[in-house]
Structures are given as C-alpha cells and as structure tokens.
Image (cartoon, rainbow, N blue to C red; front, side, top):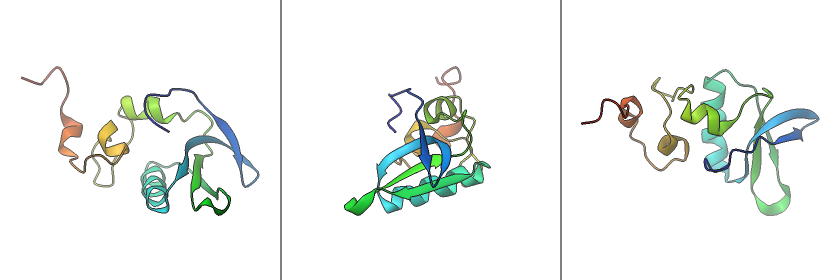
Length: 106
C-alpha cells in the first residue's frame, strides 16, 4: 500500500479477517514486510494472488494501518531504529534518517 493512501482495508486471508498491509507484492517485498511486522509483534498472514507470482500481506490486528504506524514512527526496524517512510518503501537503507526530527534539523 502506498503511503499516500490512507484507506483502511479489511480482507480475509486464510479464513482470518486481517488488516491489509499490501497487495500485489513481489516475494522479496513479502519477505521484508513479514520480517519487519513480526519483529513488531504482529501476526502476519500471506496469501498468493493466483498465478501472477504476487502476494497479499495482512496482519491480524484489525486496528493496524501502515500509513498511520509508519508516520507515527511506532514501528522498529530490524536494527532497532524507528522506521521511516523511505525505509518502509525500501527506497533507502539508511536507518540513520529515522532519528532526525524536523524540529532538530538545521
């Protein structure tokens, strides 16, 4: 789910109602999200989307919204630092950006 879409989507994955994290993702992205969300103590459900080779990823916590939790900085990365939007979208591996706050920037 792109971080510019705030709609909270509920779908059923393997017979369990889940908050949808992302849909139509590659196996590599699926593995990244699964590790990250399990580290943050979410129960992750993954389902294949037919023969396209893509997956949909969800968590059993019905209140989870990736947009809110990423911008609220409530998720921790694999190294223990706060997850930034760039890290979530895998645009940057720099986790040092996670600790910079706009009020500290000079």
